[in-house]
Structure formats: structure tokens, C-alpha cells
Length: 248
Ligand SMILES: C[S@@+](CC[C@H](N)C(=O)[O-])C[C@H]1O[C@@H](n2cnc3c(N)ncnc32)[C@H](O)[C@@H]1O
Image 1 (tube, helix red, strand yellow):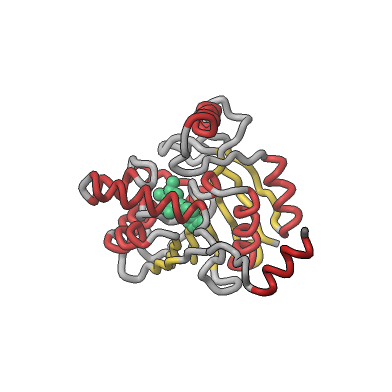
Image 2: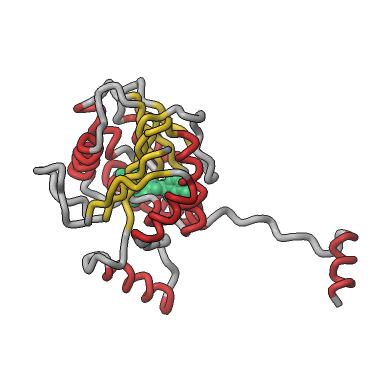
């Protein structure tokens, strides 16, 4: 039976199916297209990345400043979306050497339209980070690994280590079971699993998992910030948990 199948494949009788785009491409392309059809562009571009465009941009900026972002930092922003962070940076710290990447061109176009001309934006539809080795002092991934499988996040962490210079910092946000405020997101995903199709994946990561990945890949874990903590002050808690990794 197996020998016969192999023979058919060799003869070209049974061809492998066309590879489907990965889940994150499918889900974000559909989400963004539908939002643009239903709402004015500003609304669609905000809702697509979670809303509260200005407040979340300011908050992300406050977080990064707290962890060392300065006027001349080379910052790589993975999954930059429609530019919540880029727009805040453009207003308050435009000298930062900013490079954002995303998988969706409509989101990137909007981010570019709100940003200083010197900011760079790259479209990447794979798990490769479009930046040179050791080209960033700092990197961020806000609400990105929350939508990827663990294996995909792991690929990106390897890539992040390549792109960061030694002692460069990565600030990433994640959902965790340890937070009672994140539990309803998991319950929602369970409901989707039983009764319907998810808009996009919501993935949780444990702190122990982040510690293990960091050790395997070559990062030190500088620390964690709980979803309800705000060591940066007035901007308030982030809502997702944060991990700060330092490349060694
Ligand atoms: C919740 S939004 C957050 C966007 C932005 N970081 C922010 O906080 O405003 C998630 C973003 O991740 C992007 N994304 C999803 N999968 C991705 C992947 N594999 N690589 C890079 N970006 C991805 C989506 O297109 C979307 O812009």
C-alpha cells in the first residue's frame, strides 16, 4: 500500500496540495479587508490593531522609555500594525531610528502615512525579520506573540536575537494563565473552538516557557511586568503581561 503510494507520487499521479498561507496571513488579511469595507479608514485601522489608537501608542512609548529607549535608539518594532507606536514616536521622539515590519500592507501604508519620513516600514509575509544582523539596539513586539503559535514565536525569537546587537533589549507582550484578567480571553477561544471559527488565534505563554526559550536561544530574562502593574508611572498598566529579554 505505502510502496504503491510512493510509486504514484514519484510518477506525479498524486501531487502535493498547494501550500495554504499561514493562519496569521489569512486571519489578518480578512480582518483588515472586512474592516476597511465596513468603516472609515481611521476607524478600521484602529480597530484592526485593538483600538485606543493614541492612548495605546503613548503607553507603548512610555513602556519603551522606561526600559531605555532614547533619542538615538535604533528600534525594531515587529508587527507594528497601523502605527500606534510609530505615530506616538513621531510626535514625541522623532529622532529615534525606527523600523517597523508587518504582514499586512494596508496597515503598513496607514502607519507610514502618520510617521516622519525617516521612519522605515517593511512588509514581510514570512517569519523572517527583514533587518540586518545586530542592526537594532532595542526591539518591541506588542500584541504579536499573542496571535502566533509557540513554534512561530520561537522562530521570531531566534530572528530577534540575530537582529539585536549584544546587550540589546527585546520588550514583548504576552497573555498568561497567571492573570485572572486574561482568563476570559481563553474562555472565548474555547468557545470558538467548540462553536465557530476564530477571527485570529489567541495564544498564551507561561513565564517558565519564556525563561526556557530565552535560555535556549541566548537571552537573559531581565524581568516581567504583570498586566496590572505600571512601573513607568502615569500611562497606567499595559493590560497584557510584558517580558524584557536581553541578548547575550
Ligand atoms: C494586535 S495587532 C498589534 C499591532 C501593533 N503592535 C500595536 O500594538 O499597535 C497585531 C499585529 O501583528 C501583526 N501580525 C500578525 N501576525 C504576524 C506575523 N507573523 N509577523 C508579523 N506581524 C504579524 C498583525 O498584522 C497586526 O498588525
